Structure formats: structure tokens, C-alpha cells
Length: 122
Image (cartoon, rainbow, N blue to C red; front, top):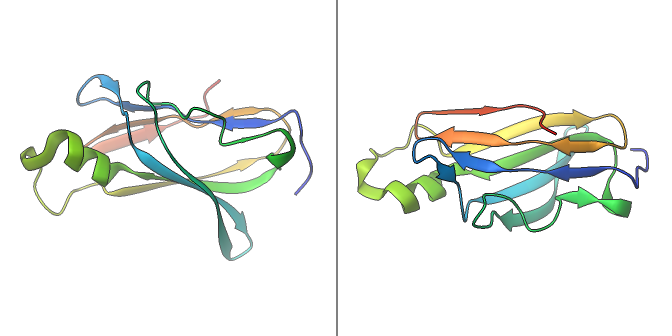
């Protein structure tokens, strides 16, 4: 993995079923190194569905393969509770992606109880 002090990684989670930010959703960031997956951090989204700090930035930023695992099931149970059947259709949502240069990578998640989507944002 190359050094990339100008790079940063951010995310934003929106609950499309409620039409608002997914506040309080837990997520974990992992570095993928060959067959190994190493946890880098665990955080929760704020009231705006964002993390208070970039997931990676400055000296901590490295190019390579990463995975964010969004704990959507716990969030959905907390916000929609008994309206959802068990087991949930979506629980943990892993998004694996590569960062090839020192740039701003934004990995947003749009989520509902029955679907999700992501893209490389700006």
C-alpha cells in the first residue's frame, strides 16, 4: 500500500424508506490484505448520517482494498422495530472497494429494509 497523505475516505448513510439520514448506524472499516481482513475502526453515524471525522485521512490514508460493513439490521430494528419481519432481509451490508490514488473517496449508502445502493460519490 502506498502512502497518500492527500487522500481521505468518507461515507454518508441515508434511509430511503424514512426519507432521512440514518443517524446512529454502526459501521466498521476493514483493510483487505490478501486473504486477511484487518479491522481499522468502528464508528457510528451522526444525526446527519455522516461520521464526525473521515474514516481515513492524512497519514492513515493508504491506497488498497477496503471494506465497510454497515450494521443496517440493528439500525432498522431500532427505527422500524415490530414493523419488520424476522429474520430481516438485510442485516450486515459489506461494501468492498479499491482506492488507487491519493484522492477523496466517498462511499455513500442508500438503505431501506429491502434494498440498498452505493456509488463513488464526491
